[in-house]
Amino acid sequence: MTTENLSEVLEVRRDKLKKSQEAGKNPFEETSYDVSVLAKAVEEKFEEYEEKPVSMAGRIMSKRGQGKVAFYDLQDSSGRIQLFLKKDLLPEIYDEIKTYDIGDIVGVKGEVFKTKMGQISVRVSEIILLSKSLQILPEKYHGLKDMDLRYRQRYVDLIVNPEVKDVFKKRSLIMRKIREFYDARDFLEVETPVLSNLAGGANARPFVTHHNALDITLYCRIALELSLKRLIVGGFDKVYEMSRVFRNEGMDATHNPEFTLLESYEAYANYEDLMKMIEELYSFLAAEVNHSEIVIYGDEEINLKAPFKKARMVDLVKEHTNVDFDVMTDVEVARAAAKELHVDVDGKNSVGEIMAEVFDEYVEDKLIQPTFVTMHPVEISPLAKKDPKDPRYTERFELFINGAECANAFSELNDPIDQKDRFMSQVQKKTDGDDEAHPYDADFINALEVGLPPTGGLGIGIDRLIMLFTNQHSIRDVILFPTMKPID
Image (cartoon, rainbow, N blue to C red):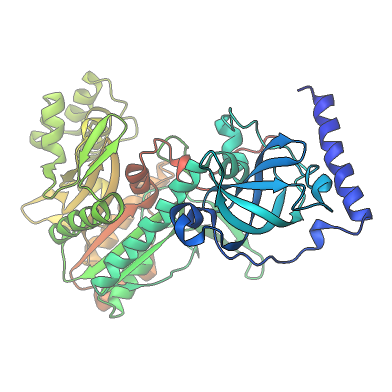
């Protein structure tokens, strides 16, 4: 259809609206409609509704028939049902009904029955136009396939691709079940500030804004961690928050600038306790959401049955590269080893940082089945306790599934002197040009000096978790309104 023809079609819709308004029937003046049942319920419980009166509302998605009988498909939030429209039953408004367009929203009353072809339908006795669609929905059989347009116009995507709605229904279910899991363990759900004077709790570049009344720079939070640990200091032994965080970083299949993060903190627990809790959480979600410990993700069968594999980062790097960073103490030796592996380590000034870069390049995408990668280098773990047996490493793990990081946890550093030294090291990195280095947080040091009990902290990227349980391969497919560059 040419642009000119398209404009003509849009103009026809506006003309129909104008004629309806001139006749005293302005759909936009309607404020409510009494809906007694949804399409899915009628479909599933037909015997209960057969030959019974119903009142329904939704969007016209297709039109068939001619002459004195027409069939329209009505789509509501639950699904579709066929409308049977007969001139004899609607003598005064039948001709007007025939002018309704695909996309129009209507309210109908009638009785449920089955046609001779066995199609569950509503024999319409009353119908009213509730909202006039002035745009054209994508063509029925081809649908809305342009991914960029689908993300920009999610409202159209949800209308013409009903399976998309199922993903977000499952997302809602998963988030409810996560809360159920934590609530059953006596965790307290809390809310912490989105705007802060410092962007801490992770190594990431923040979004910057300005508060006019106070005339100060503020940052959108990049993590929930530091506020939640302050609550542990204050005497809440178990807290969690599931909310949006913001990181001014690149975008790809597993990264969106704003995403949903779950963080939980438990006093008197360590990172090994958190491994058990993660195994229990994933098993619980698998049973409640997918009714199976096996999750299909692309061509892979992911087994979420506990226990998950556990391995030190340094051992995994040796397994996949035959390079043993565990025996290295000289940064230049580590740098040379990375160069041999064609890994760019410019700006990395410690053996631990270099090893982590090699891990990212050679190991991460090989971890298909759930794997706890433990003992992260202290240089990349500024908030985690050191391993008492080897202070080069920390009591930290990341959970990898299908080659992507799905959780991050550690025994929280509660030594204020050690924490201060690590913050100062991060400040030096920022001075040297690392935009993602952790800032110095004097109030957090003060909180640790008041006293933080031994604590286990956990973070889970909810969007990636939902990708796994819904078999979606782009984070944009599990976020209703992903970040997009303006068309202009």
